[in-house]
Image (tube, rainbow over all chains, first blue to last red; front, side, top):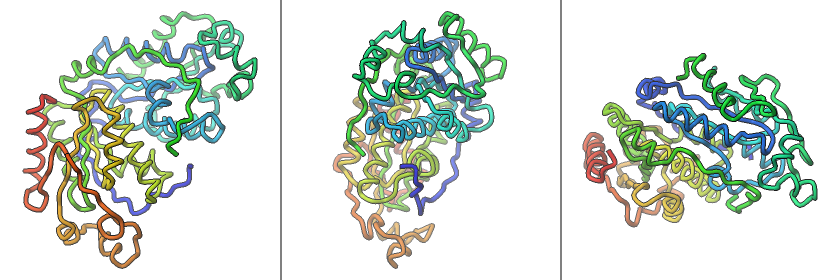
Length: 201
Length: 201
């Protein structure tokens, strides 16, 4: 699926730049890439960060299973190849949103370092912010809000990250959230502080 | 490619709604879907509409060959199946942008009515605006800014819409632009009038 096929594609100059849109919105367009095990808290934090920034007048958008797996990527499954293509497409879409000037959050397990690095390479310096939501497998399995770990242990769900499929911890993420010990609120504030310190908001 | 494979995908409620983002931006999020032959003027008009609205303080974004064929869809070619998947993905991405509140323009030949209708079905009522950039094949072939028609006639480019592949004219587009007879400026104004009349801006 990753073979490049597009040829005879004509380039046009866009008349409005990324910088002009950022000026209009009074914010930098970035991609906050949350990665971590199922039930680590990724989606909750990604949504809460987007919500809190929105209340400050910032334009935010969440890309997650709701709007990606049920839409753009509804023809992909959970094989290693499909997971890679899943992450590739999310990286490409997130790039468009960041280019549009939107503070975008993504919440996907994204277990492979190589896939996350491939996504990062699409972005301008400072535009891709990898956030490791670090929770032990014990914590996640104890939470198990949807009973997925139980199903994974019984073999009902195959290729489940952390149980029957690998999760590669981020090598050098911009932010690590200690999900075993911090509250959601503390994790959200840690992300927002990073954005302020780096003049994204 | 269009088989649905996603299972065990958990839904989360998003904390910020489409309507709240539209209120922040003081505009409706829509997708302006320009369709027409190569050299009909789609990209020029789509870019100029986005530019003119931006100068009025509106957040706009252009999806076209530049950022889609070279990015998200760089693993698709020009076979009928790949064209369909190309348009499907653009429809899905445009839906995310419209949901984000952005006035989004797309400029793709999108020759098949069924593909355009499939895209339309993803959107809320009034959110998908099909714009037929109507230029005769004679006009387009006379313009031929990149010499593509010449290459298509010689057989150097296979499956070229209007020459060796079909173009199905929109059955019931929201807007028809008479590209044989109108100036770019007139076409842009026609689109902007539509947006005003329909309270999108």
